[in-house]
Length: 536
Image (cartoon, rainbow, N blue to C red; front, top):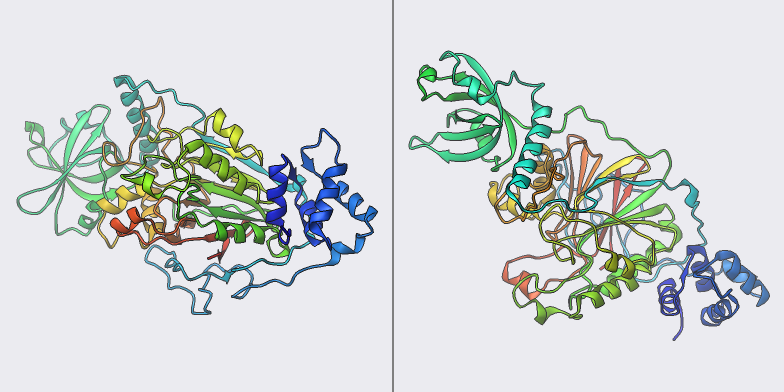
């Protein structure tokens, strides 16, 4: 079979047990007879070689009298413009940029949108990446589970959550422990930092919020006619907040209550200024590949990886994958009827083959999702050694869900996003929806916790510490899971939900999910601007 594209060359190399430097693949693809050039390169490669080098391929081509082949290129084919990245990417039809949303972001690009639509093989360039300039570090994430499931683990994780988040709030209010409030004079001004243990409405339509700290609980009343009453709709059980107000006149007789004047969340400071890279370099942010599903969009993935080999993608040196590499097994009812690959390990082997299409000099970070073969309860530990061995082609950085990654000085919080289902279900439609997933993500930033509510639909595992607290403010918050695309900013933190690579399944139809597919947000790390590319 002719080898017109780098992807096919990478595939043949993978079948023979080899990886290759990106420029080596480029040179082979540009040869007059790529198949013959590849065979000659493999025939003459040293026995102990695992990675086909650019120098070796050049030697083979020179010996074949094909030195001029490196200048042969195939014109780029694109349905849309290839403008420089813009903070408000417009759709490929050339329409106006999306309108800003209330949270300071922008409306998500629709499935047919994107700054540039790439729908076929593009020119292979002779680009060369200086990997010595790459700088990638996983700075935070669960390395292994320490929880035993015993009662003390639950106490530890909630106490750790309270201590971390209350520390961010105590500087903003004059906090008093709950047992101290009971002894204070009625009518006094007071403040509590506590965990939300109950939310209910009174017969008069007011809101009673019970807050708990390490000393006890205290009831707080939010009057329905106050401006802050709207904030009660944003509250989730088990999140940590601070309230200020006035104690009732009968406070000392055991029936005291705090009439709330202000509600404070841990929040992202409004003055926060994100860090940026010192050079022109970009990262592709994708999630929810779902290899193994009958609806996995293999051709779109090939177009994406083909594009990564082009001159146009030369600055894209990082790939951040936010979970659900494979479709998994037994994740939802009758899933087996929608599987193309029924064995979970075969799914990962297939995913690894698709991963080999990515240029070899790109740095890759992967975290698991709820379809992956790790525990469902969050935080999810990294993939085990057996799965790491299967996905070893690129020497990927494999971390937990969630994880914080430093990419050339830019802090990226990667979280698969299962709790977004709960946030969207619990909050009013005007505050969070599937059509604007980045808005739901902004609430997690506001609460400084990626999965605040315990005991709901999101499975949470007790550990010695709460690894789901957002202790340090990220520059970028990257998520997936909901199969919808959206991006925006929240207090200068860029939020991106990157859609998926799976067409609509029968199960998704039954729950009314219309996925946004084959979209690759390309993040310019030097200025945190986005170019949205669509490959289907």
